[in-house]
Picture 1 (cartoon, one colour):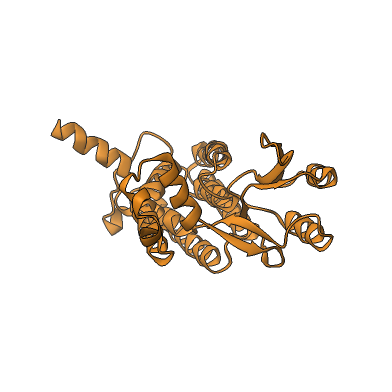
Picture 2 (picture 1 turned 90 degrees about the horizontal axis):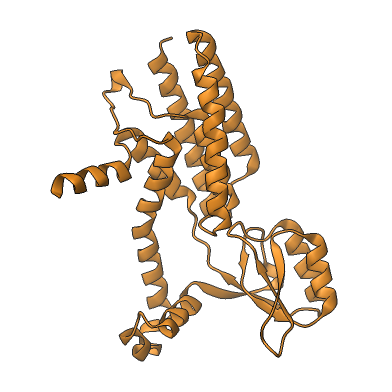
Length: 288
């Protein structure tokens, strides 16, 4: 078996797993850890096989280095609330299988390669292709919630802070009964005064976090600390506190959009066409 055939197997398996992850994300709102763990294992094993076949350690080293760097960068972006924890793990698993871009000669596929790790191309492509989708979904929510009719004056000054705040609150948030909360939901700011609520959340130390409040009426507030959303333990704690009347019967949450399909599209573009950022940069240089 030649190297191109092994590269092709790696690509097919990665795409199939990304499709599988996208289906999970769309249907259930999360990507299971076991799926990403399987892909990581496949990446390490397949690149170890490449190392033995070629007597070149670069394949397994590149796999490990790419995995570590991609995890570090995507984890940082997760902390900045750009995507969820499952997306971080999917990027990391893709990096483990395909540490650098490959051209498949017998399929006549020669993507435009970048100077940085292949997974960064997938990340950039995913972000770029997600913008149109987010615009369409947000516009649909604005129309569905009658934001235009109810806030005509604000829309005239759409770049005004109050207009943007009203837009976000009316379209990208919704109230959910505590009994219907699920793992991965992103809880918005909830103000309270009870000291025991502060201690319960602080001791659990999961995705929910308590902050000091500057409002005179409330001493504290809690919210999700990252785009990963609340954990199973957070959900259980919130339901217990609700049953004991420590908090209200409903909470405001951010509407989450599955990002995994964008990762899948970004991966396919990176494999078949190349790095969109590099292509845009080259076209800009040629135009200038």
